[in-house]
Amino acid sequence: GQYHLAGTELSNDFEFMDDANMCIATAVSLLMILICAMATYGAYKQHAAWIIPFFCYQIFDFALNTLVAISILVYPNTVRDYLQQLPANFPYKEEIMSMNSICLTVILLLCLSITLAFKAYLISCVWNCYRYINNRNNSDVLVYITTNDTAVSLSGLTRAMRGSSI
Image (cartoon, helix red, strand yellow):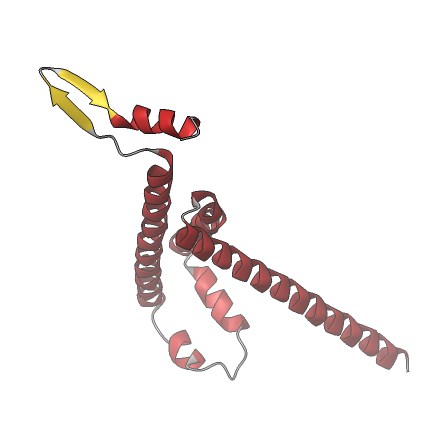
């Protein structure tokens, strides 16, 4: 009877862990939706500051993936340990386990490298969008009228006109 009681308590703990993981996953998903919506709104309405959270997420994600690639490079045996922990019904588990360790590591690093290159490209796209909006909002178009080595900036004139109530 005592063993059964301990088993029941243990299963309740696992159910609690599943609920906690589900709550965390839901919170993270909602946060990601919010960050993506902010970036989309910022790009659409030309507000550069709204893009920053998404850009920070991209940098964080890139850093984590880089750490995974480095850990696989430094400790290639961790791949085997991870594969052994997968459930028995995981697709192609036996085929992957039967592969040579070096071959498996090279294939995994190649896939991670392609993923990192794509993520770096997306980071540069978001950064260029941020810079474009920031530069567009912060700078007036400078138009110079040159006559005999003198230059007159029309942006100062437009700024002065905005200040007065014309």
